[in-house]
Image: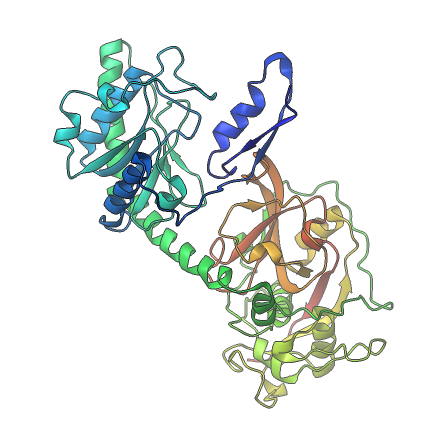
Length: 498
């Protein structure tokens, strides 16, 4: 028996099918599944019938307005019963919405055919309701057996995706949230069930494609696409140079103050400082390696809120222009504007300088060519002390809850292409290169792990259109991407400055 199956797909696209392949092995044999796709020659052109049909499908797709098409496919290993196929077809017709449907011959032996099945020689189109193709001509396109799914889903015209293998008739929104509209079974008789299903399908499809939720999905998809393209088009070197900025020669000072050990028995199961008013809106560092300054101000903004009861946005530009604090034991390791810095050094500078000004008094420019304009009479927040939190996630959580948002460094390799969800990479280096802010923690679904995972909530400094409205969720519990390696807490003192 083979040790594993190499599957030309990927987990986020067909999670149900991949999970089913794991579970359906006879004799409880756990065969390994390796999703390595999509392995597709995107630009290959040939003259066979399948390629001609795919070309027609893509041509039709290109002619549709943005976000107007519902894509229907049950994946590479699923089929529907004939009754389910009929209900879906009539529901789509009743909705009046554009659709692109990849259909296969029905399987009446089992509605949930989550196994590889050689298709019959019959034409799948013969199983559609009488007159369906003629009545929906110009509204939708039915593609038999197969379509280039990756190319279809990557297009702006796709506004929704139906991919249920279990025929609960879930209409799944496009986007990183994987939210669903579920159709409950409300029927008592078979005929009534058919009416309810087709009516509910029509209602849900129309609501998704025309309602506020559908419009929001389309807008969000465009935003995510633009945000992802902003970073994915960069080489790793360009990405590091322009958007990271934690000093590459990182080591914690040997004399760094250590945060005291805190009790952890009564920690809440989830916590978010945004819900308590201690976090300013997401900011944007631009093409300047000043992330360290945003991590510093974020932590001090939270600490100042706890000390004074007021949330004040502090000046990153003051740190960029004025902070040249160096590690005395490591030559050349100094805070240097857009060329990088360290949060602990920035706290040290702030302590010596007497505090930070408001952002409105010293606004951010995204460059480090100007002279320092610090005005001590306009200080808005002062550092009382700062310390390093131990490499223990329970202690990190305890310090977060007690002391406010925490400054930290992370390896940002997976942040370059992040658009949402809980990021749980199997392999991630712990070389730290980006300064960010812990603001909370919780538990949520991780697509790559196919289960609920605890995560940290991280505030980034790449604007609100990046990630989940400017935030990043990363697995906690294993020091993923070095998130536990350099965490600092800061305390503030109140100031009488107006």
